[in-house]
Amino acid sequence: MTTETNKKDIPELEDLVEMTVNIDQELIKDCSDSGARTDEAKTIYMTSRRIAHDLIVKGEKETPEERVTQRCVISTGDPSVADIMSYTNNPVDAGVEAIKNGAPIFVDINMVKAGVTKKGHDCEVICVLDEDQNAEVAKKYGITRTAAGFLMARDRLEGSIVAIGNAPSAALAVCRMIEHGIKPALIVGTPVGFVNAAESKEEVRKMDVPSITCIGTRGGTPMAVACVNELVAIAKEKDEC
Image (cartoon, rainbow, N blue to C red; front, side, top):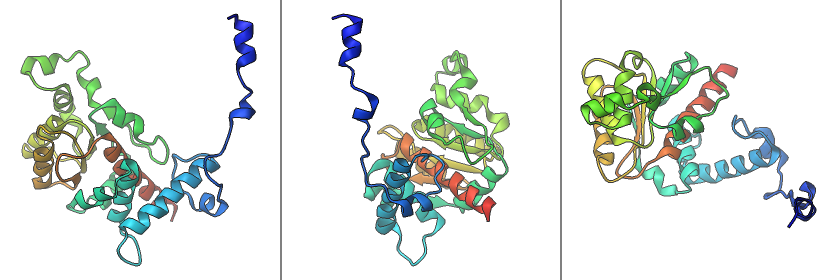
């Protein structure tokens, strides 16, 4: 088949474009999420948000913690996630304040970095894998690359936001640094898996540092990203008040 024939077989763009939801102007007007940029995206996001709101919010007015939980439920498509969320030492206020102050956000893997919104804040998002690019420290001590990366960033973690969505070993490394006096402003810890995931999050909750975690083996990148992005949204709204 020739290139010319291939071109003729490709349908026009207009023949393929189709909305997947009914556009709702009221939802569009109410949407403040920086990641939703088109009418369809805003309608989808706000529809999801209203469903999650009805599932999660218990009182007449949603709490900041319920807002973060809603975002996590949406990111996983799993309402039962609400039952495993844990908020320690007033973490929403701590995270919002850190974002408003432009604190760096240190993350364990590039998937988390890619998911964190680039709008609505001035925080630098740093993947710790870049701190030990050739894995020299990880190989020297026989530890994971994410743990090594956080250790290499130890001189910049004070007052930062730490967001871990994948690696329990990274969460444990951060806990060891906290025990030695290095205190992030907030830890978002949702590492997932069967080896040290539940234990590392329990360890995070014991630290004298604000934290948002989930209980048990569940978790993952979508939840860590959801927590950070909702904190950004709350911080942006406070700035606009």
